[in-house]
Length: 241
Image 1 (spheres, rainbow, N blue to C red):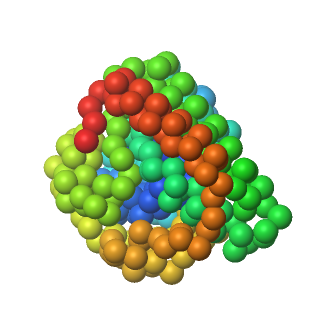
Image 2: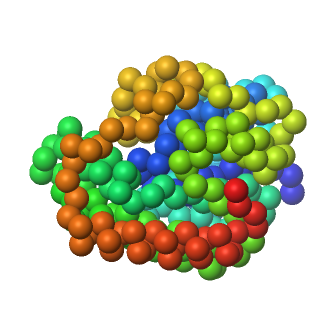
C-alpha cells in the first residue's frame, strides 16, 4: 500500500527550541507541519486525523511529501509497527537541564504561579520523566532515530540544518529563515513569544533565565539524568551530530 505522506517526528521536551525548529522544517516546500498537534500516532486513523486537523488551519503544499509533528509530552506516543510509519524520520533531541528547567519555570510563572510547572520541583519532575520516556523509546527502537543536541539550533545552525536535510532526504536545503503560519505564536501550539514572529534565528532565542532560582539538589539530579540519558540516546541512535 502506498501512503500519500511520509512522517517526520521530533521527540523532545518543552523549551528546547522545538518551535523554532518546527517552523524551519515546516517552511520547507516538501514538508507540512510546524506546531505541536497534541496527539498520539497509534493507528491509521490517527495518521488520517493529523492531516484532517492540520488542513483545518493550514493548506497542504501542492508538491509536499512529508507531514511533521513534534511530541514533547509523555501523553503522546508513536506506534512504529504501523506500516505507514516504517519509513518515518524520527529525531530525538535534548537540551541541557539548567536553562531548560529555568525556562519552563519562567514560562509558566508568566501564566500562573500556581501552575505545577511554575515550581522548581514540578518543572524538574517533568524534565526527568520526559528523559525517561525518551530513553525507553530509544531502547525499544534502536537505530530508528537520529539524535542531536538542541543547542545546535543556535550554536551551529548551518551544520545542523545541513545534517537534518540529509537525514530527511530532501533535495532542497532547510533555510535559516522561516515562514509564519496560521498557528504561529498561538498558545498551545508552541512558542508564544514575539521572537517566533521574526522569521529567522536570532541570538536572543537563547533566553535569559538568570532571574530564576533552582535548588542545587534538583539541578544535580537533573544533570545526572541528562548525562545518563544523552549517553544512551547517542548509543542507540542511527546517527547523531
